Length: 197
Image (cartoon, rainbow, N blue to C red; front, top):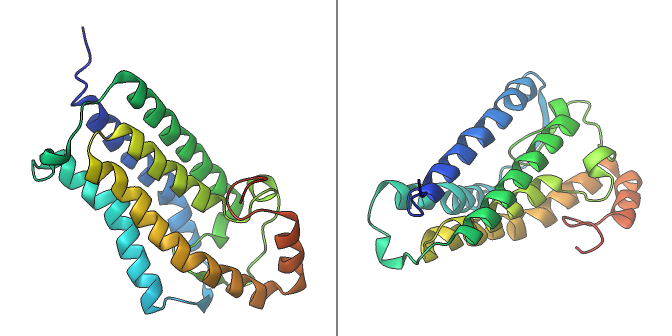
């Protein structure tokens, strides 16, 4: 029995989204039990979150459930599906590791919890923002998996917008909170990709 190369990427992507939601569910519940001490939810932050969610989630969903973007489809092949699926699996592992390391300190926005601890071990030993690494890998996985020039590229554009609007603001907030400890951490780590950037 041959796989339907048109349907398979859609099924894989939907399974990935469900798995991502499951990974995020418990940390979201746990973190809500700890009060927020510092909030930085500016208009720029809200805008970047909307753009990121649109690119990573809503546009692919439109492609999966409607024919509105079909004019931008291209022929899928098995190798692209394997690469895309592999990247999405790596992304899920990174999300899981990051949520586990942060515990109650996790937040989907630029917040610091009461008695916030700077996590610098485990997945945070080499990079300061492994959650962003996971999102970049997700966006790249979608690019390979989804055979549509709009749905496939939208995650890279959407998350890229969030990343470049947010990362500087987040690092400034961490420096303000942790001072020299964070500056020393910055000197021995990269932002997103070990030994690269």
